[in-house]
Length: 558
Picture 1 (cartoon, helix red, strand yellow):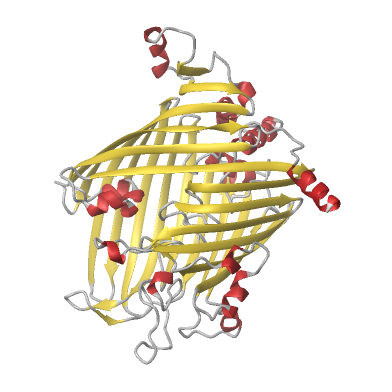
Picture 2 (cartoon, helix red, strand yellow):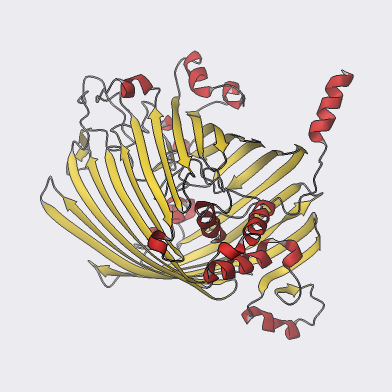
């Protein structure tokens, strides 16, 4: 017993004082910078599990700073900007402003609103024990161009966020906000995708259509041994897992924010993640039809410096109970599901990412639904081959063009992938695919160019070509032919075609072009201008339908 107690004490004893344990939200632009620096081989950023603590971001920035002679002028300016925001010792009164707690009179202090300083409503404490309170605000305005130029949508919201670290190792984060929509609702889900899964927005029972948001978590991190880090996080936050440039086949994050308990272990070249999450089923106006479903994902990766990363993931979707087998972090859940009478939706994935060449990255994923590996290896193409695969490359500064990045990616998803005979167990949250957004019986060519004009401006253009085989419905919306094109409908024995040809059904080719310009004229004030053109070419029915819109967003965090 004494030996066991001694081991526990060693594992729990922190040997390193950490500054900021709370995570940086995935929407923050510093992740774009870290990705570019990773492809440039100045750092190694694990973007398959991208949610980083602020101290991790600070450490990456320090490593880049040590090699700043390899940076372009714009990258160096971005680095200096992010150092003030993420490295505590870089912050001082000359570059950081607080509305409250600065020691100045309130009205004398208001000039900081429009300064280029890093802004906070309030901050207090010291390294390892602190609090930061920030105001959040968004204003969206959108205009449809085709086919109806009279449609306009306006949205605005505001809220508060509190974050910080306690006792050097416990990070915390909380935000909440409320918003309202004016004019027509048509463009709301395009301007802000989370409207697709906002209950208040979709319920629409109040006079003014409104929405809200909240997230919160606690995260504990220790390093009991050299190069051995462990974190445990509990709460709600937007998160993703796996690789993918346009979208991810494993966990894309294009779904409601999950409530989860996550374990992350990093030891030398080994990375391990186990996540136990809950979410909801399809939206329903009837309370007795609403339910909770569960998602368990485990991921093991070997990361060899300057060579490649190789990972294997297992995931289970289930409902109606808490299953202790799926809470066991060292059990392979895909195999365990069989012993539990094969009731749940299981899948696993294999993926890789290379770092052999400077400025060039390659990555790929093979997602295998319902244990169909042997069918894939034997070349079967029937309904049992529920797989998806993805191959892509990221090039930074192609043709020696400074500050430019290029992404190219191909994704193919076979019919019936992500679906399950029990609709409550399909691979969705709120009805949206947890994996790649194009869904089953489809493929996509994705490309994107992004250019950092300066440390205050970034322009991007992307093009997606999607081929999709849709299920066929009658005029009343009833399913008449299931070809595996909708995650809602699993294969039906003795009804659906067991051969499941790829792209069978109502064939639609989609061309999608997006232009984006993001600029930050004043620190903490971000303006985004976007234009999107979408053309659906219905090959089966012989008609085309186009749709285009533009919108602007102002985001404020202070």
